[in-house]
Image (cartoon, rainbow, N blue to C red):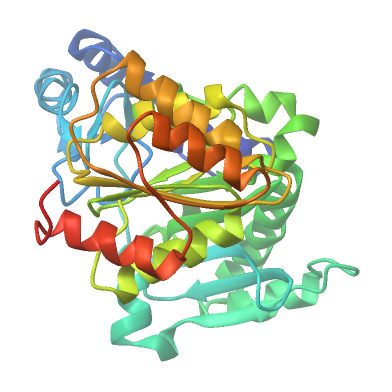
Length: 381
């Protein structure tokens, strides 16, 4: 789960991290009133769950309340990577002497949280990793002992040469780690962590990604979810108890099991196609899940073909077949469908599909190749 910048900043403030707090506006008039209260120049920042806000025009400087109203009106309602901006954060503009990056991520390879810090902040850390990887310092945190003060100070010395700034940064790192753990986060970052001309160290932007598996024991964190800032298809999938991630390709994938879903997407790429999504209907699907899956996938205009890849272990393939037939009766699906079914109740599933005019394949490679060809227009549908 993603949360907005203003919500992430609230998590930092709760830990005592110095953050110039602003207020959230949903109309240009509210933005003007907030800017008037804050006084001086302000920054208007789009609140959407995606990166690249600045490059898309979603971050603007305003030197007066009237200009804040004008700039907020330009940002509110704009589209950033397919997401509509419904809220803007109005925050005081800061005089910046330097910018650094600090972040923690759960690293699967090392099975532990890993710090990444860099004195080259204020830009995409991915860009720094490509152009100048030596500027990124990494440190693994022992899950048993946690993040210790001497480790925080060591990382701080990689960011600053001034002793007071090093001590201030070390305290911020310790508190950020605490916020990371208490929120059940998979990612927590401050970019940029700034110094002012007076030598203060502050966090003026923040980002948290929350591990969905942690939400059941953190209702206060789950309450921060904003469905209006998520892709509609992902909201529908969550409500239907489906695991769905939108991608940029044109081969829609309906698969049971995360491992098989990953293998299916790999195979689509191997045969020259591009997956349109990751969609896992689960290990014990019922026909209604398949109906919902097809409804979500067909709402994506980029999808040119739908590929079912079902291995029936716990999943009954006849349930999936019934779901496909039901979905086809409920709505007209314009794109071709390629079906691969094998496993539990396979014979029954094949008959259900055959009676409805569908053909089911059993070979995974054959099914994927056919789907990719259809997406490219190589085979008539």
